[in-house]
Length: 281
Image 1 (tube, helix red, strand yellow):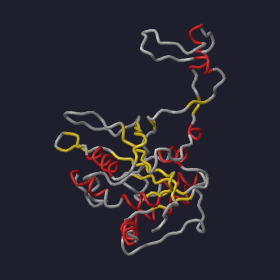
Image 2: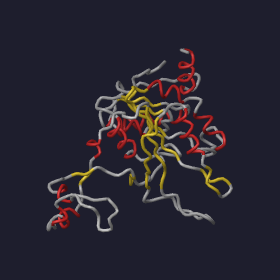
Image 3: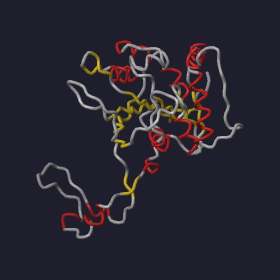
Image 4: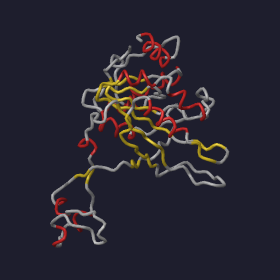
């Protein structure tokens, strides 16, 4: 099988259910989990034992009600052997405008982290951020209750030792990622910002590791991977998107012609990827 036990991180945003009809084959929400399970095994087999899968996806509104095909898909993957490590929320501070009779603007999306083991590669230090301006004022005058771990004032059992923050310059981020939408579609109708794959590559892929995006669109994941010194394989069944991805990684990630290998297959690479896996059984 292609890439067996070689991939450190698969990060992708598959076509959402019944979305982008002009760009992808439509998948009904009721059938989405079943469809996704037709190719999860090649993903699983391609990953190293310490590798991870990150899926960026969003529920769909059907007849005014949220269809939970996303959760059904994640639960189905769990039953198929994947471990659900963490659920991240991508918060979009600049969501698309619009009006709906029973809901507000869509300001966030899921990013599910799954893995083959409960302890995949995880580099917390790679995503640390500045601790913030609150430190200077909060730690300036520490009281006696700040110098040791103590029960909270309402006796909830939760306590903290504020003094441990003294001298710290960085802190771990939360699992809510605040990343604005990109202003242009970059040759694709559903481009996520480069900062989204950048975050997960820093967190889940070691230096000189291999990143794969099997629904690569116009190549944003490739730009992120190359900018961080990782190798990357981009896959899409739309030749126009593949050509756009090659153009973007050369222009935005400074990849040379010798560094970019472009292959076109008679059948979609996703299908060949799957067929290679089945042929080994």
